[in-house]
Image (cartoon, rainbow, N blue to C red):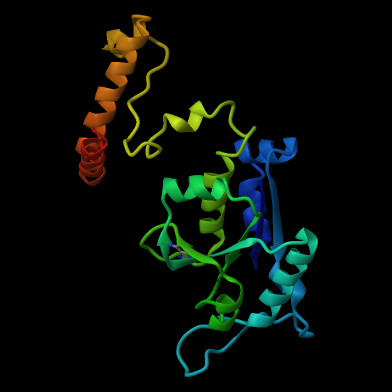
Length: 236
Ligand code: ADE
């Protein structure tokens, strides 16, 4: 999988996406991530990328031309049109389900990060296929959301985690929150690990984990629990 990120702050994305699991996956070649500086595509001698909004109002708006030039250069590199996603609080809120679908996308992905008050609507109309938000709150730019989306997608690509099981058993994958985890020591400050986990009985452990998963979801995310139960009823 290849993900391109178009931004005014490529170093910010590089810093985050060069570390830990994603950083190692990039070095191994399991995922390809390229961060592009939109400012490199201005034709203006001052390398200007924004201007005041028509109609007045606060803040600056990113101009269409540098983004369009950057987009065309990426298309040329790819010899194809990437599925283009604009990171914005106005987009559909990201879910695990959408991250799974995007990790299976047969074209590469381009994430466009806005800054200031936003981006000229005409470039969005021209190149963007989808708008994604990472939650109902507003950040100073699309860089952190682009890194969040990249991480959520990349970790499900082949060769990034040691096996599919690493994400198949996790919270949100099957509509439930994950069961609790324990590690050594067996007793910590008087608190023992649930005995079933020491039993070596795989069926009992799996049953306990499912029960805990249901309990956690019911307690912490009653909305998810309700949906899970409705779907389980439908599947019967
Ligand atoms: N840009 C600013 N806030 C954002 C959000 N919540 N999601 C995606 N992009 C954003």
